[in-house]
Amino acid sequence: MDKRAELIAAADRLFDRHGFMATSMDQLTEAAGMSSRTLYKHIGSKTDLIVAVLAERHQRFMRQMEVEVESVDALFAALENWVATEGANGCLFLRAVGETGGDVPEVVDVMADHKAMLGLRIEQIVKTEVPGHHATDLAEQILVLFEGAMTASIYRGLYAVQSARQAASALMAQARRGEPPR
Amino acid sequence: MDKRAELIAAADRLFDRHGFMATSMDQLTEAAGMSSRTLYKHIGSKTDLIVAVLAERHQRFMRQMEVEVESVDALFAALENWVATEGANGCLFLRAVGETGGDVPEVVDVMADHKAMLGLRIEQIVKTEVPGHHATDLAEQILVLFEGAMTASIYRGLYAVQSARQAASALMAQARRGEPPR
DNA sequence: GCCTCTGTATAACGAACGTTTTACATCTGG
DNA sequence: CCAGATGTAAAACGTTCGTTATACAGAGGC
Image 1: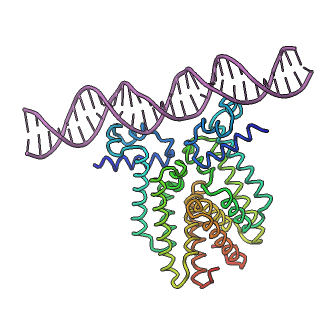
Image 2 (image 1 turned 60 degrees about the vertical axis):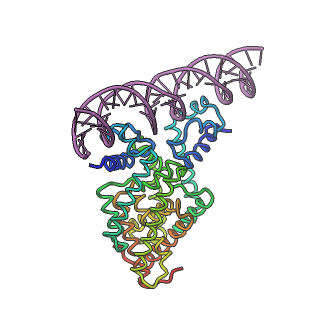
Image 3 (image 1 turned 120 degrees about the vertical axis):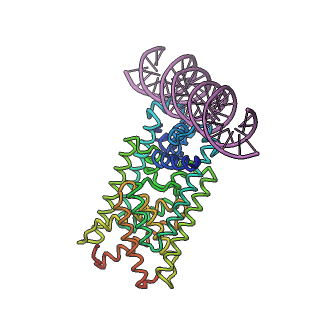
């Protein structure tokens, strides 16, 4: 069994639940079921662990995106599923940047990469769903709805995601009907 | 001059810029220009200071809401102005809850109060702008757009807020035209 | 059979944390 | 004019932090 993967999985849970700074290395070693020496041999430092957790999340996200998300509606359906099964604590990438004040370049970079790829994928989807449409502005609206669903679901739960899904569907339908982008 | 107000203003800036946990009491005393003894006499503890900062933000927010926001469009215009002048680091209430893991009841409470009042105000506005319409679902969509604009503007800047504003305008127009709520 | 690898358990490290204390200065109202 | 409130400066408190070091145990390949 891969010790490093176990560690990252345990760290993901703790960081998401309690925050990055509020999670101590002692809690992490205990949750991962390994000695601190092994932990440091595998990841180097707490900062490295944070980056590794984010990188792992990014990969999981991309995989899911490419496998089962080929429409705007499927995007929000996937988020509904995520919130229903894993709960909602807000975007872990932005939380990491916020807790570190944007002062850790590796954290900022992995967040930027993640968000850039999210934006690109949404633009791709929008372009195939509404062909011949200048999709940039519409894609940005979908992105904002997605981000809002993730954030608002912290205190509104699934209803926020369902509302975002409906709003996205309405905006997409309107664009398909050929309303001119302003 | 009110020492407590100075302290809260300085703390607001530091918390927003660097995060709550990452801001030490030493940094706070220095930024507020007072000794640690005075600081503790005025607020009691770091947790109390966090709560005080959030409570102050909530009051500022409410004041601005009631004065200059009487339409959905004005809501997003106000956010545009906020992001343009103060920058975008995400909702400080949700960041505080995230950093404390939801384990500090006073922090959770002030966040919940703030979000409840935001939701209520949006519902009010939507109801007056689209009378005779079952406004609950539409209001939730506007709320999600607002939350998404605040969050996405961290990495997208003003464009996210402008996009949210346009999307909100489209959804409101559609509702005014009498499209049935699904 | 020994050597290296990989692991545990645990204690120690110096630094930084939130908070309190001690000692002293300055203003203000009766 | 002095008593009380309110402030500063700075050290000390005990704890916890991230990280490293010490001592030892088992497994597998040559």
